[in-house]
Length: 526
Image (tube, rainbow, N blue to C red; front, side, top):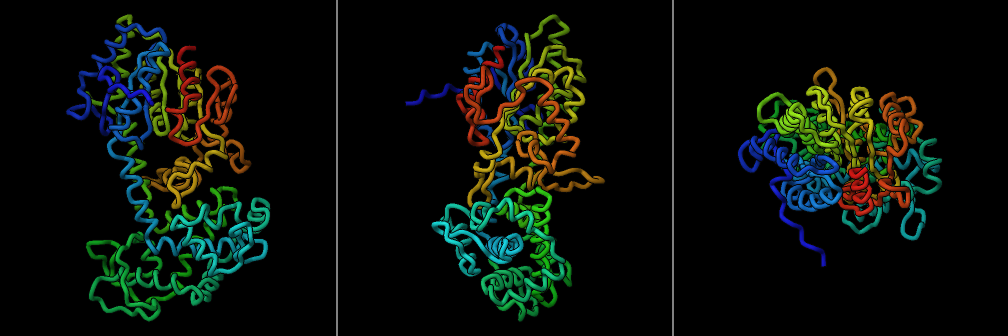
């Protein structure tokens, strides 16, 4: 029987929202000085550990699981633990609509149609060709669609377009056959074959009807149905592309008066997604057949629901924690530590531990430490970091010779990353793959623009594939990793040495996998 966890101790955590302290449930501003003074009085032999958890961790979980569970482990290592608890419902905001998307008939039909044409273009035989039960090749399109429905209904172990299911040597053939067709030619080909797919036509026809205001008389002959979709999740931009509007939007930007329905517009829209997938295959920027198709469909048709806004808000919280003000959590901690230094009170060292988005928090902490002139030695530990190579390259430029001299990262080998299904059957790879493929991007002229396959520090693939050999930021990070021995631990690592082992199999494992925790304790003691 597992030993029950102790309740979290208020001497070991600060709770913030939007980076700020204040009224409950946030910690009081006065808690910063009280906790750090108490920490100094304890005289920890191995200094202060500041732990930043990931952004998809609820407040209750951060307090009652992570803080309560890890506090005695850090104390055992001779350090005083302080946890930054900073979540405000991000997990629910990011994931709560994914089941709705999965059950949206339009999403399913778009994924099936795009998959059908992607497989036809990358298959050596130029048509649907995948493995069914027992490895038996299947070339029948109707069967292909049926197998997809089985996958979406959790009746199939793997999607019918996973790399291992494509007949032939997937890695050798898919890329060499992934030619980029002409958009108009492909759209015409898709349109000509839509009569063979009545379910696609019925579902998209219902979406067209639902995208018109109730009571508006529209020409629906092309749609083939007078039914309206009961749920309309497709983004306004995607609807406008498939079903051009002739009138202004109602209170719902998705619902507008639309003109005569034509299947060519729908086919052209699907063709654009097919080409986007093929381009990623040609450039080795894909995330496997199925996940790349899902990413492109989500990005194109469901952009406002995939969570990029929430992800950016999450990152902003880690930055706001160091903003000017009398109530910002991270800034007050850094200021208090600096005041203690000036008073002749200094911890032996500070160990910063950042899991997932917590690594972004650490980068911002280091900037604040430099601005404050912090003198206490700092060592950094990343656990499956969700920080971009772009952001960490900046941190390396600013802190490599000071706060980043002692650094270690624990992350999964790409094979494990691929097997860590984040939200099966919607998405079959890890959270980091999802972030890289859908949530990350850049600010371009004041407008946020997504970047598919954004290089992340915690993903091995970006440091092993030739496609990124000329990416200056990726190479900057890779050179940093190799500038000093033992900066990298790829799970699974066993009997690799003190502080160098990990057996984490999932993104969320790194703060509870025993071998990783033993390594972390040894780093703190070292």
